[in-house]
Every structure is written in structure tokens, then in C-alpha cells.
Image (cartoon, rainbow, N blue to C red; front, side, top):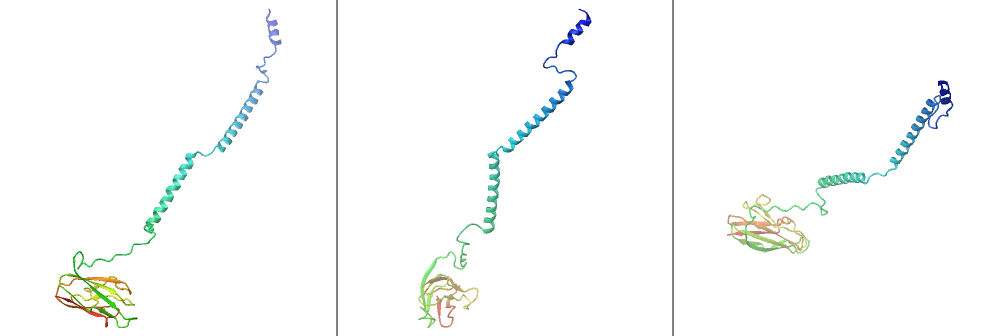
Amino acid sequence: MSKKKKRNKAGNQPAGPTQPLASEGGSLDEETQAARRAQQKAEWAAQKKKDDRRPIPASTFAWIGGLAGIAVLTVAGVFLLVSGGSDSDGPAAPTATPDPRVAGLPIAKTVDVEADDDGQEVNPLFSPTSVTGNAGEVIEIRMINVGSVAHNLRVSGIDKEYDTRDDFLTDPGSIKGGEEGSVLVKIDEPGTYPFRCDFHPVQQIGNLVLN
């Protein structure tokens, strides 16, 4: 077959289904690329929408809850530190400091003394009005208020004067009717030491006699 006939035969054959014409090849490639880009954009948009709808992991909530719990405990600790505790009964009542002159020493003698007043501060008195003991020993005077108003009992110290630092005073310092209090006395020097009620210092008096 001649070369001319071969060319005519090749030129008369139809193009295959997957082979674009040379004149249309560039146009089809651009359209395909544009379609692919559009498809990718649609896929990315769908994926992002799906991610936005995805529920928050439980571990995230646990982490947030842990931080909240720490904050609450911190605030509670500061409150307790500032307020001094959560004791519903309030601060503890102060306790009396033991008199160092008698603290830890045994009581050698206990004497009861009644405080009376025959009514509303009429004729206040002690009964008995004299208490005896030995110098250098601890003597407990238990004052029982059988009257209707408050009384106490103050023993003068070694200086035999009232309202000085060596006095001995009943605890409590004010004893209501029907109640009682006591005072521990220790004076090393023999002698007579006066005692009185601070509320009735002229009428309600007595003596502590130490041998």
C-alpha cells in the first residue's frame, strides 16, 4: 500500500471514546479540573459541618468539672481559715488561770460559809464570820449564797488590805442567789486576815485566822 493510501485510511478511523479530539483536549481538561475543585470544596464543607456537630468528649467535661471542684475547695478553705473554723458553738470560753500560789497543791481544809441578806439587801451577812486554819496550808472556803442578791467573798492577802494584787477572790466573782463558788487561800504567815463581800463591804465581813 502506498503512503498516500495509508494516510487516508488512518484519517478515516473515528476517535476512541476516551480519546478527546485534539482541538477539544485543553477545554475538557479545564472543565474536569474545575469540577474536581468544586467537588473537593463540597467535601470539605460537608466534613467541617460534620465536625461542628460532633459532641464534646466526656473527658473535656471531666476536666472542667475538676477545675470547678478545686476552685470550690479553695474558696471553702479560705473561708474556714478566715472564720477560724466551722464550730457552730462559737469560740471557746476562756478558762481561768490557776492561782500560782495554790496551783497543784493539796487542799488541807474546806470550810463552808453562807452568804445571806434577809431579803433585798437587808442585813447582808456571812455565817460563820470566822474561819480558822494553819498558815502555809491551802484552805478552801466554799461560799454558798442562800440570799436573794449577788454576793462574793474576798480575802485580803499578806498585806491585809483589799483590792491589791495579793487578794484571794471566789470564782466566780459574782455568785447569784442559790448558787455557790469557792476560793483557795494560802498565806504563809500566821495572823488574822479579814474577808468581805465586795457588794456589801461594810456590813458583810469576817476573818480568816491562821495559826
